[in-house]
Image 1 (tube, rainbow, N blue to C red):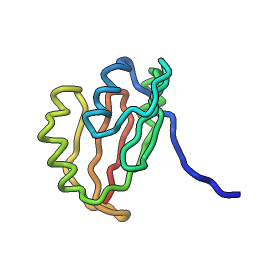
Image 2: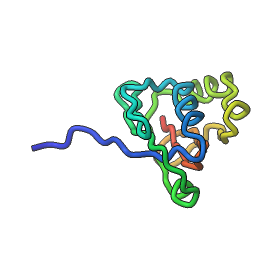
Image 3: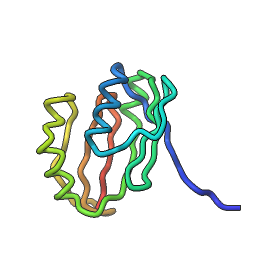
Image 4: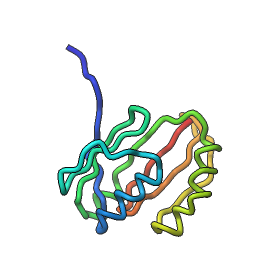
Length: 116
């Protein structure tokens, strides 16, 4: 017996529809939508967006996604003007002990670590 995947349930914050749009702008595709839960995937990386708004929980929740080029990812995000469209925070690539990363604080307050 082996584990096959990990798909965290991520809170959407107060605006579920805007959160769905944000993740689509980041290149995730909707695999399924069950109303208050939506399955997203990009390049085999999956998560489930949950229509759930708890700021304290979200601000203490983090997701790490491995990417192949942090600089290119940052450039793409900046070109899409996601900070202005969705009021999210995007940090410039920084070098950490575990790799070069771009942080995005999403609509709910979840910190996404996109790590090269």
